[in-house]
Amino acid sequence: MTGITIALSKGRIFDETLPLLAAAGIVPSENPETSRKLIIDTNKPDVRVVIVRASDVPTYVQYGAADIGVAGKDILIEHGGDGLYSPLDLKIAKCQMMVAVREGFDYASAVRQGNRLKVASKYTKIAREHFAGKGVHIDLIKLYGSMELAPLAGLADAIVDIVSTGGTLKANKLVAVEHIVDISSRLVVNQASLKVKRETLQPIIDAFAQAVEK
Ligand code: PRP
Image: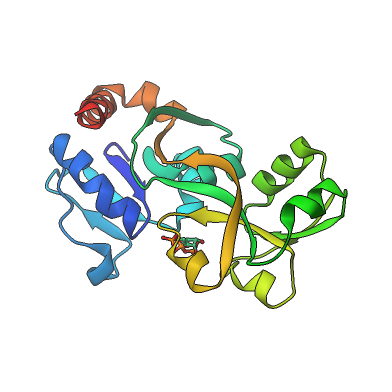
């Protein structure tokens, strides 16, 4: 494969990457929300976009099945970043990784008293490192979604999840009690691709960088 393959996930990342692609002169020919196609051609014959789950973007790029991709910092921390070059914060899809609990749960006291906390999250690495850093012992429960339900259903005392507008927490009577890390999406590049296809890739990376600074 001599062309360039770009891995993106549907939704916010795809939408917010479109202006950056446009700055590099790349226009996808279809929107994955409506087409359901997983391989999308672009106006450039040698550039295509593959649509994968957000958490799979680093894997596609790591193994060279995609040359570049866009992935949230949350996903990159969980993945570990092996074999990936991550040169650019794209400053898109911004949100925050937070600890949240049920309204009325006295998180500060529970921590102060050294209680063992039940924590549910799909971000297990981030959660484990955060509480280890605080010296708080936790039982970690891995979930794959709808984490807001866990404190309400009595599965966990706290969750570690992404907060964007705060609307989901509010709708479920949860409150954020701790900020862990600011999240935004980064460009990830396969290291071998960068060597072999630098002539095509570097102008795309440069165009992204310029568009971010605007
Ligand atoms: C994320 C997160 C929250 C929600 C927060 O879920 O898990 O549920 O967004 O956004 P808000 O603060 O604006 O309400 P997402 O929609 O990304 O889906 P997911 O459950 O697959 O992670």
